[in-house]
Length: 197
Image (cartoon, rainbow, N blue to C red; front, top):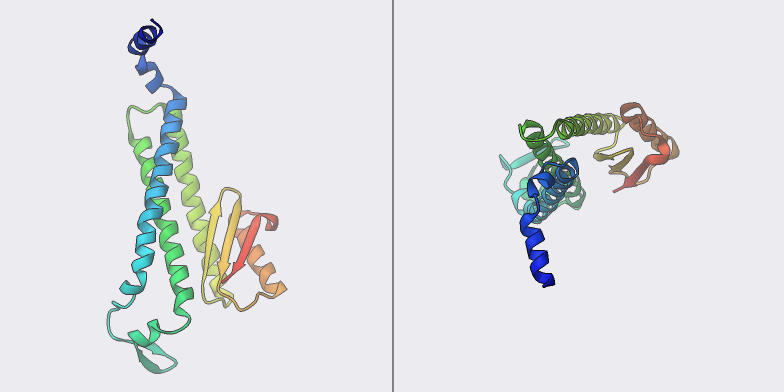
């Protein structure tokens, strides 16, 4: 008797009310972004694994370094390539995750069936992501202008992580990095994590 009552209630429930609630839309959006990040991570791991093979496919067959020409294979076999691969892979991974998140948010904003509040939230999230991307680019450019060969900045909420290619940061260099992050993103030094690679 109980099972029949449960089956009857399930059949009689108005699912359209559930689908039109704001909470359902938010959970759906968060789930889609999570799936996008998971797929991106899996795809990017495959790209990172094949990055070494693809990096050998360079246009031309020489690279000018200190007025000497070296073959592409010599440059790839250099001991610094691991660091370069790390920075390239980090930028690719960051960009693909952001692109997928932006695509999901744009789909929500463009969908005429979505509630106005959800559209507004999606547009605000798009604006925040674009602002973070601009700040990250500015931070990386300014840090490289200070003489560091490579760096990657990742802003997540009110925190920033900066990975810098360095043999050892001096106190004044660390202060310069913190100042750049604060000026470009408004993130206080306590929320900035600087990692040397």
